[in-house]
Image 1 (cartoon, helix red, strand yellow):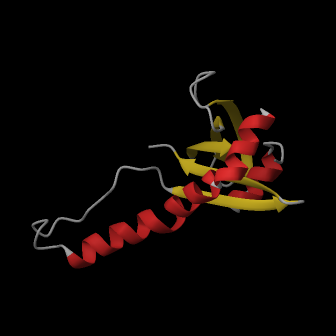
Image 2 (image 1 turned 90 degrees about the vertical axis):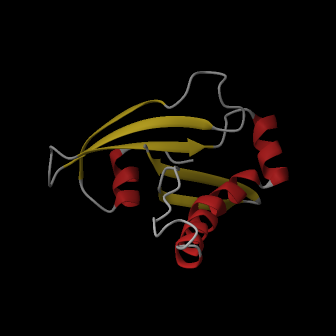
Length: 133
């Protein structure tokens, strides 16, 4: 995976970045299938604007990487955030208003900012960027 740099984040967010602060997104040992990074971003256009992101990447351990490749787990998770959850919300709001007393459904999951699946010489690598909630 690319390094987490200002340039990398500018490519993803399509905005000029003033400052980034990167930290762990979970405690060591909390997450078997990925590395989680917490990222704070401020922008050049509006330095007061601050967003928080969660970046989920492949784990460093080769056996865990192989497990993810064998199960295609990261790609499936990317499809859940990118397609299934938004479609589920749309379906429920379109089809079930009488059941919900005309209230709009809002699922509690972080919005997907960017997801990428890259095949490097037969090796699938996926990154998920989610907004913190």
